[in-house]
Length: 253
Image 1: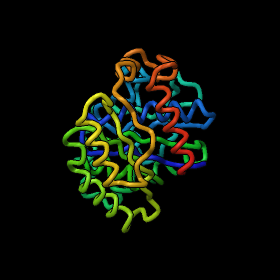
Image 2: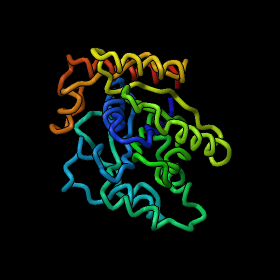
Image 3: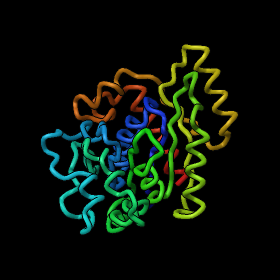
Image 4: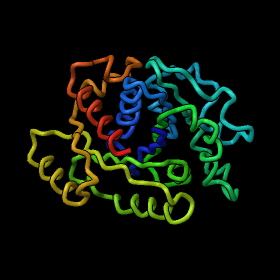
């Protein structure tokens, strides 16, 4: 298995970072050499495992550094088998720094090349936009996973994301595959959530993962303790769901 999976959705608040950190931890638990790359300037994936004070070099420096990715950007995490490249708020300046550069969409792909053989899985947490950073992630990825919240506005903007994916597949990355869609923050108790889930299933069909990530206080609390759901609340529904999602992802990859 050698996969680079971008977790992408330009809508915020859909459980994207929660999916990135816990899916990465699930892969590491399965014995896969795993790297989590935080490309969101908010850096929520990063502070889920690292103290901000210990981060000296980040994804921003990596993408601007002409010498490649190896120079101190990779950090160990408390999760055995999981390493990460963190993000800081300065990543928000990246697009203005790269504007006009002919290789701007390929920066991440070029920097990551030496790491592809070191890891079985690389998970990329992308920002909630369809700008240059997300495009870099899609150009570098082998697969894209789309989390969608089962809320009233669930499918809003999905067409724009799928159009961007198709544009990337048309030229810079023809091998990019949509790995699937996962429903997140699902509240099984409400009629609206069940109706939205059925709507998502009708739209995406076989691309929809069987696993549904339900709303969970434990999933929200775990990052505050610098833990994944598997050590913070191993018996919780969130732990079981992300373990199952990991199995589905492995089967599809």
